[in-house]
Amino acid sequence: MRFRALGNTGFQVSVIGFGTWAIGGHDWGRVDDRDSIKAVHRAADLGVNLFDTAPLYGNGHAETVLGQALEGLRNDVFVATKCGPVEPRPGLMHVDLSRDGLVRQCEDSLRRLRTDRIDLLQVHWFDPAWPIEDTMGHLADLVQAGKVRAIGVSNFAAAELARAAAGGPLATLQPPYNLFARDIEHDILPRCIELGLGVLAYEPLARGLLTAKFDERPVLAPGDIRRNDARFRMPTLGRYVAAARRIERIARAQDMTAAQAAVAWVLAQPGVTTALCGAKTATQAVENARAADFEPDAVTLDRLARAAVLEG
Ligand SMILES: NC(=O)c1ccc[n+]([C@@H]2O[C@H](COP(=O)([O-])OP(=O)(O)OC[C@H]3O[C@@H](n4cnc5c(N)ncnc54)[C@H](OP(=O)(O)O)[C@@H]3O)[C@@H](O)[C@H]2O)c1
Image (cartoon, rainbow, N blue to C red):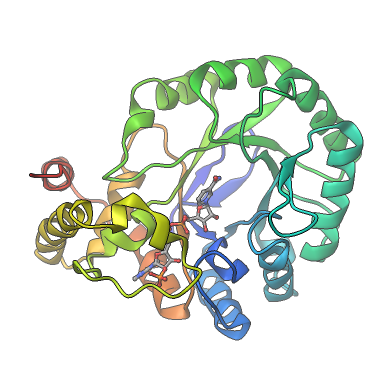
């Protein structure tokens, strides 16, 4: 495993992070918690020390399973979770970034994660109804209280990032980033570099498209959010499938899988600290963790980027 400094937090985190959205068991079809726990353990065996979760993932279930899986490992790992959206009952999701709301969400996450501190608490997304300057103040108080060690945000635009950083000790951003989705390169990644933020890139596999395992007729379980994702619908899907096959050919020539090449490409981009890879099984977790072994040269990185341009 390779490790990098996470912004100014003082923590060294693995370049591969483990994302737990799918193991929440609600939005990506059914999962067996025993498989999820095995996946977490195999990732940790291979040096993955950063685990990302959120109360929203399975309405607390991902945090609960992660807390169970990390029993006995807690002091060796870095646990990142999120705050803001709450869903007291299915379908009743709203954002609460009030002081009391944040204290309550923090306590709930600590209980589910079976821990006494959250290493990184991230605002899940920007909500104009809640001034980010106030939110940063409330989160800084949680740091003071020893409940949280560092503060991050997710899905923020460049201007929102600047406001958050001016409002308190902002350490990280979690944005979407992969070979098919490079928007953050325009102004968000440069802003992160300027502000010295750690960057946790999510969806590095484009929800599995970049593993090259899908064809034009993907089998997706009931309840899998990809059933409602335009990228997984023809004719768009066909263009992604063709690009993923081109990427796979380049990867294979260098003994990588398509997934590993996609993750290695993300890790090679300036400003990125860690690629947060989702995994439902130990096999996926191992393949993703081993992406850290590859550092493709500039020519290969360029070929991968060109192969990812959608045709047609
Ligand atoms: N902050 C945010 O708003 C936000 C949003 C999205 C994600 N995230 C974070 O980022 C993490 C990663 O993103 P993501 O899970 O959405 O997408 P992703 O990492 O691009 O894709 C993960 C999915 O791809 C499939 N997969 C993973 N590794 C594979 C492999 N080696 N071979 C074949 N299939 C593989 C698995 O699903 P199947 O086996 O079912 O295909 C897995 O659930 C999340 O878990 C979460 O922690 C954050």
